[in-house]
Image 1: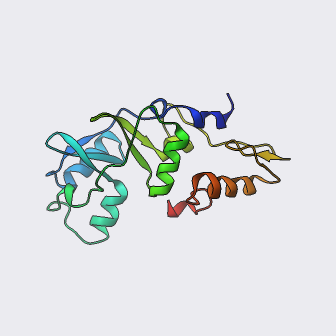
Image 2: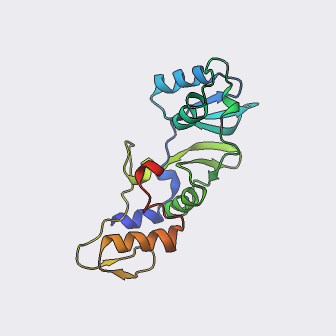
Length: 180
């Protein structure tokens, strides 16, 4: 299978089922310690046993540390992103990437009905440290074709801009990495 064909595969093949759920009354410090112990970069936040939000390392850094808030007295629900942005386990990777790009997020919660099955991360899709990764399309040097529509380009940069502008729509591939 060529790398770009993976974009038609279902999300469930790439999601992680190893995620942490914390109660909304937990303190930021408690959650940060939990994240460190388990080696996670995010947690789902639950209300009455059902996940209603997500908190990432970046949230802790920007919404607590940078604002000078006390992590011992700040509740996790004060800094969580809510509502959760979700995707079906049967959705295509290309659809998930489009949602991430349009919402400017790096994680999607994979749900079936009301049950959380896993978390899909942008890092897993572009080659992070997961058990299965999808590498974005590698292309030949002479003439490159768009894996979505077949349009042909002289350079990979032109192809990247085309995919970015036409198929994803949020310029995710042309941003500097620090802006992600």
